[in-house]
Image (cartoon, rainbow, N blue to C red; front, side, top):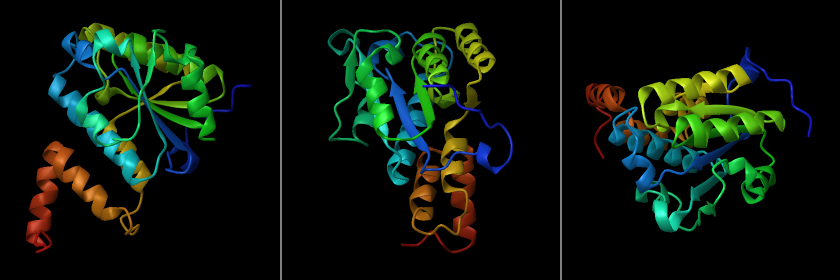
Length: 217
């Protein structure tokens, strides 16, 4: 598959639910135990919001773990969003070297892969760089990913950018999927995600809803 022309500007540079597929890599207990680049609770919050956003906008989602019997299952917060989905359990450190993962993404027909993983410099960077060469446009969700140190996290992001991967954050991705508050079918769900996982933006939104008298059932 030839590499596609990557669009960095204009409206086509933004994500849409119709063109996106979400790949969540190795959000497991053992990985979180070794993560030191960011507070683990923040990463859990961000990746959970991302998963809920994908569910809300009908974005196909691929879950994968590495050696689950030793590294632990994918965290419950993600599994609860997709209770009927069994993560693809690999032995390969680079998930893009497992044909099942590649095939699962390809089967969606989507060309924009939104990726998050533990750890940033290895389990996220390697498949992100690999998928770029296979013609995908890849968005790395850095606040839903982490590494064993701030240095490793930052170098992983830097390496991905050099390869053409687009760094972004969980709230940005969900915002791009929504794009317009007039899209009433997803606006209530979007609001709920922001209230629960949006941090200070969520608290500000709750205040605004209160002032508008919209916080009543």
